[in-house]
Image (cartoon, rainbow, N blue to C red; front, side, top):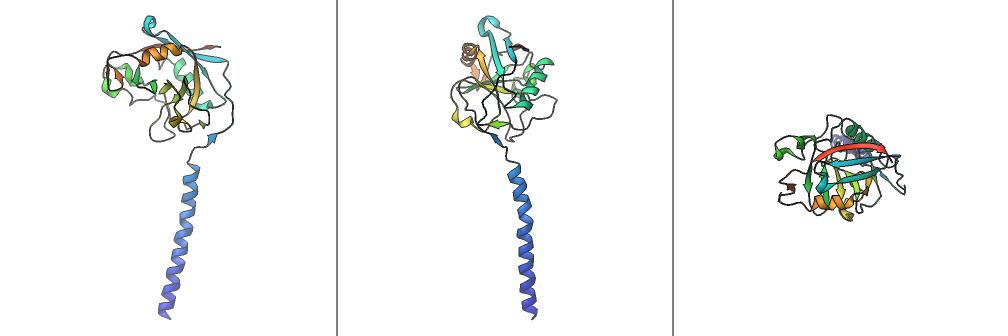
Length: 208
């Protein structure tokens, strides 16, 4: 009888342990970002105009913004642009896939910290969509956490299928893609960072 009671106790405990796992599994699933599917991007009535410090070499880049796809990231980008946070930052990361900028730390004289910074505002949650990462798409850079986008952004130089559904898309270059390619070809570099800073003079939000 004692052995039977012991066996029953162990069975009940095991059932209880299994039932306690279910809520955690459910929460983990909820933490996976939803992917907005089948939504056509609609350009905002305002665009972003990036003026480069060396305008003779790098010109201007104009970006349309998609609030219907990524409202939180578009709001953040506009907010930081209007506050002048992007003014004086650099495109600190350049490779065969992207040019990336928007790090406030790239304004200082320590190139070693470029790419590690963000604004003083909270991170922006993921706003993933099934829009393909074609040439000229503007995405939100992030860390390993899907919800860690903040101020940094990148522009794709070509179709990047591996980026699909993994990074928030919030805009696209509509003018100045030739300037993006000029920036992408800058030499010399230390790793992915240009030795001579490729600096943004200003990012303005203006009517389309």
